[in-house]
Amino acid sequence: MTNNNFTGNVWLQMLGRDEQSLNTGVGNVTFEPGARTKWHLHPAGQIILVTEGVGYYQEKGQPKKILYKGDVIKCPANVEHWHGASKDSYFVQIAVTDNKNGSVVWLHPVTEEEYHK
Amino acid sequence: MTNNNFTGNVWLQMLGRDEQSLNTGVGNVTFEPGARTKWHLHPAGQIILVTEGVGYYQEKGQPKKILYKGDVIKCPANVEHWHGASKDSYFVQIAVTDNKNGSVVWLHPVTEEEYHK
Image (cartoon, rainbow over all chains, first blue to last red; front, side, top):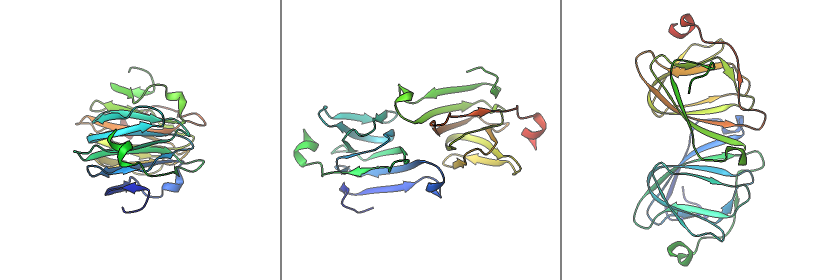
């Protein structure tokens, strides 16, 4: 997947067809080392299940967290955040999103300074 | 977990604390061989991600499906169904449920005849 909501290479596989039939979307996302989302928010929140690799997660105004396989993150509704791979490792996550009021609002890129901080 | 919504031994681990903060619940469920849910339905549907073992899934009036690691099932809203382990294998699944209008309505047990059919 190449689009301007991400920095670096990211692969997205939606799990299950006919995603509109339920309010809940589930997608498997793979980030190459250094790849990450833009800053964004979810109007009804998101749950991230870490399945492989080492990643980063940061909410606005909070320190960056390091994520490992088995970690579970709940992004509260409407809280700005970003996530992605660490600089030296691939990162694979399952994202569970409530789509009722729109699933995501994309904001600005994560700068190199923010990413490495 | 021992309660009368299941037949056999089942282990449930909710993923993440404070499940009420989002509308979406995520739980990891392990069924021993032969263990299964009662017939039930979800007012807003459910997504099942199979992570280990061999299981069964059946919607009312449909044939039983055999589930393997990597399979994804979408239970449509308000469709009666059951799921659980096959008779010879453990079965592990991640259940993703929209909890807005209540997460589950429990019905009657799956009989031995229904289970083995």
